[in-house]
Image (tube, rainbow, N blue to C red; front, side, top):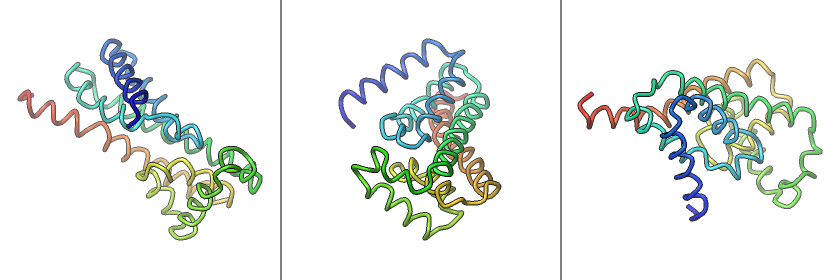
Length: 176
């Protein structure tokens, strides 16, 4: 990880620790940024969300609202990305960063064509592709209902897998 990104992540975790009552909202914003096409390339939210797990438990913060915030943010980020792809269609290729790095979109399209509707669910768990698959699904007019089912289910599981292990580890080690 780049030193400046690591510093930013440490600052964000420190903020969460200091302002526990904001944790569900912070989780929402981080997951939204992590799931929004293009923005996710600049938001190191996965690392911060993983780091929030132990802070949640150690700080006595309820896991359920934080998990719900992260899941809702991730689902909304993908939904917005889908909508952008649906509106832009092929014009997305001519917008930065895809105009300068077309391989990002090409890999996303290949993944989408290979895995179909499952690409939305599976793609959530693979960093670089996570930012592109919802956009591609929109570009190719994947049925909205199918997209949202995969989107919401994967967002719920993704948020749980990022937050719960750290919270469970603290609980285990502290005997709680």
